[in-house]
Length: 531
Image (cartoon, rainbow, N blue to C red; front, side, top):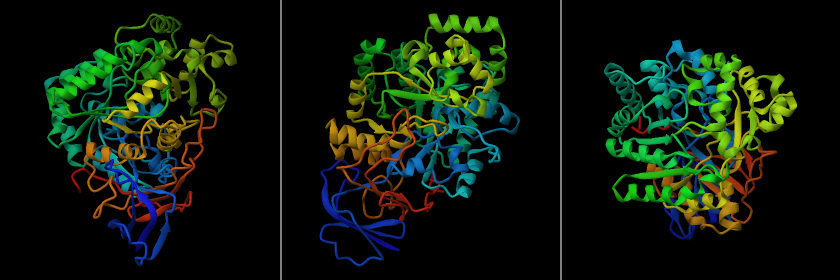
């Protein structure tokens, strides 16, 4: 089928100035981009007058890993113009998942990805998981990263210790196996179990294995707050040792008390670039983050997995020790209570109906509602929910968000958890950049913003033949109105689709038409090796 998109202005994904052109799609590819083609014959004509014709957006930090198997349309992404997303983030995902760890891993994963009895939980390798994604017929294109935590679990379980030589060799074999299946790189989340137990030698060795496939090291660094400078030095050192492209997840600076570290943070990044390290990062355009509530607990509470964590929460003496560590801090640990405050952390998801009234409360309000101090009320909730609780935390400064957004190495992401009452970035991160930061605040131009959403992430992750409006490239296209595009969700009502996304085309099929989903699922599972 031929589709002609005419009368629009093209943002090609490369950052060059907007230009008038028509775009002709044949089957799943762009076959012509040119001016004066408005009268070409086509089976379908889309009038894009007043609109921008851009490549489909690429979300480089997504948490749809489980949701895409249960609700494969993934409408919160598609409806904001996203045509490709990268799963397997933060070192914790659905594969590889040895059968003996399924029960424990479901509890560990629930706060990030949710939980479901409607999937098989039979994903011993990345290949098995990618096959399940293909069978689900996803609504958008899906890429995968090998998650470090899953690799570690398969090789040596969930214990807090260094790997022995045989275990290290086994981990390298697992990374190689799953890179061969088509993964785009290796991810780690150094605040999440069991990734947080790893040291430089382990990470550098696994990164070196991923680099053999020209993969990317995508990392939620160990600290984004008090110890951010040491944390960045750690990641830079690992990247240099392995010779791998190093990509920071959701780059930020947490805590207004840490604003004095901002210039040094930027200098470390720039110096790494000057030293030859290939560096990049993604960012969501908000001053609040979102993750599992369990990260507010000190690292030692997580030792041995979720069941051990729950056992510790049963002990009044352990609770006192947890509170003491949260109030005085532990060197090198990102203390969310310290940088966001008890009143700046809000519950976004639970799995049990009896606790649904907690959704939307901050931790102070949770304590008031339960007649307990905020700490013990939070511990009670985590215990009752078996640690499967999501949160939003208000962490930073708007001027830092804008600075990062303008940096050449930045690309846009959602980092959205899809359960419960989510962070509004799930529904609106990309339109927010184009509406708030381009049109309203003029922090950057549309051409630069579109590049950060399309061509740049395609180049960083080496996603072949996508991310640009070019002849011969796959027809992943977003047509949006630059005068009206804006995110509509907020922290009270986050689950609202944006305005201004007129058409979304994925692999040559129209999946959004005049702002409405057509019901089509046109995504594909992408493999870096092309298989």
